[in-house]
Length: 214
Image (cartoon, rainbow, N blue to C red):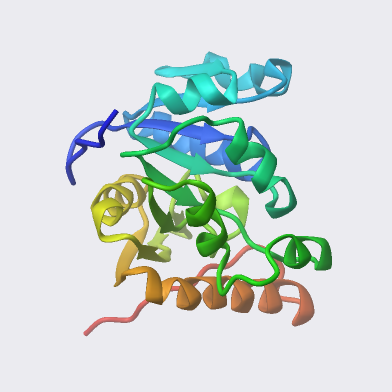
């Protein structure tokens, strides 16, 4: 199924993984008017999401097949298994919303410059885009904090970025399109900075990055 989404209007989105990140993205996408399928191996873990309008829960392969944009919201150490269960993703936009934040996660993708490179090798034909990984999960459903739009960098394959930028903007984020796959490292480093400030510097989770404009 080739991706024919545009930068405006409703999109068909699959969110793989109903955990903290995935469930918040599902809520945000549904609120913004997108059609959302949740990919869950255990449907009971996503039961609360079925009450939302335009949301259904399917097995991961079925969820991916029903969507044009597929969001990976699983731990990095589970990526290989998750991707294997999604089937052929050719022509789809594949969003990498992960972070390698532990030794186990880093080891899972060792030898690759970015997690997105690891994903792209295992999903040939998909347009891989990095996004939704530079803010705490609790703020993903609404891209604002204290009434201010949170800065969200996006980078990845040219064919997929416009759809992902549109999705992020529909959630309320102040989105920056950083460019192609060579800019994914910048997005991953922005996530590392947020994590460092939140936990090593004691800022906590209630903050996001912003841009000052004249």
